[in-house]
Length: 470
Ligand SMILES: Cc1cc2nc3c(=O)[nH]c(=O)nc-3n(C[C@H](O)[C@H](O)[C@H](O)COP(=O)(O)OP(=O)(O)OC[C@H]3O[C@@H](n4cnc5c(N)ncnc54)[C@H](O)[C@@H]3O)c2cc1C
Image (cartoon, rainbow, N blue to C red; front, side, top):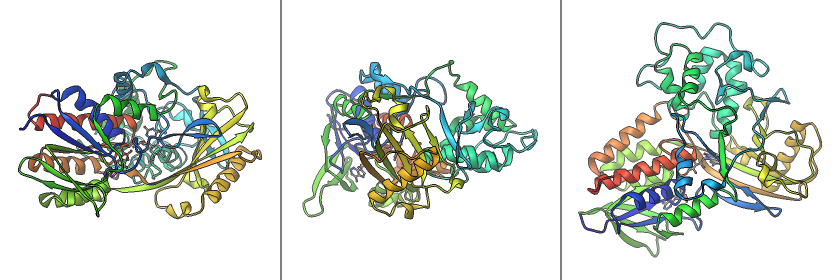
């Protein structure tokens, strides 16, 4: 292998940047890493913006502090690696609400993404089915099986727990339905426990015990100044050459590695690399793989992954009457456009404003309901304002400013068997082209910590494939 290595990272989201940092830390000195990002900005779904003179996240807002398997999350480890651990801040208000029959009820404690570990605690929101969670003398899930979250929880705790609790909580993250989403991908710790435990209550408790949390320990964190600081710090620490507005349009194997076609069709640039790390969503990755003769099958498999579109509407409201909540989640059965709302300046106390202006963010759009987003920004903002007033039961003041961020095709809808399909694709790549790796939300999970880990793992695979010792 020629020295120094040339590694191309396609995609400048958090996955690609975490991969660049890992390459900087573990690849031989002198390795040339280039990140190709098609848009003009790095960060992908991480984007800190400003509204009415205050910072607000136009994309992802926070990261889990803990890994579901125990220990600190990969996002916290990256923040620490970048010297930003002292800037982690936590929500000042942790309590969120659920909309139930048009009104707000506190989200019950002791659940795992809405799946109860104590049925008595959820009865104010949803009445669990009686006696359905019986021990049938075998684990809930066979060793390699997967199932939708909804199917498992409906069978064990009944429809109300799914519709009023699990569905809105999963929907808040994936904009998808519990009945469609893979347990193994969206709730890996529960899936692991379900392969051992005979009841769902037992599995939830086992999953919770595997990652015990000290009383008062914060679940989420973000960075003072916003998540774009994480993006900037990772881009700098990775030491990679960053190429913005540089879409990679084609990937061709060569005798020694890869040739990338970069930039506009009329004026393409051809670049050679020894290894390529694809850190783009599944569809663009599938398009690039489809051009490699022996990877058409792998391309078709990952190209099947569907995505939900959402929009984040942020309103700047002068002194509104807001309850002391971090926000609320809305079950699909309530018939509202809003699926989740964050009282941004209440939840993040460090952003509270002396002038009393509140930033309220609403997430709209559910998988399969893309038509609801096909209206103007003004109409979307008006609908959000109307629904917020209705849910809160008070007429909210008119916003002094608003921002609408559309995230088309942004949230992967992992159906049961997703992880097996990804494992098969990666095995095909390792066999035929070990210097090509796949990472990111399209494969390993949607959360920032999972994306960071996915990028770092792919970087180590590439180091191994190029003959280094990761
Ligand atoms: C609205 C919203 C809110 C979210 N909130 C949270 C949250 O609070 N906490 C959390 O943990 N997670 C959250 N997530 C999920 C999380 O933000 C994402 O899963 C994660 O950021 C994805 O990172 P990624 O790098 O894998 O992909 P992306 O962020 O999609 O980055 C991929 C990059 O690749 C670029 N690209 C695509 N094709 C090409 C090409 N051909 N050539 C070059 N570049 C290309 C894209 O422009 C993009 O910049 C949220 C997601 C959304 C949509």
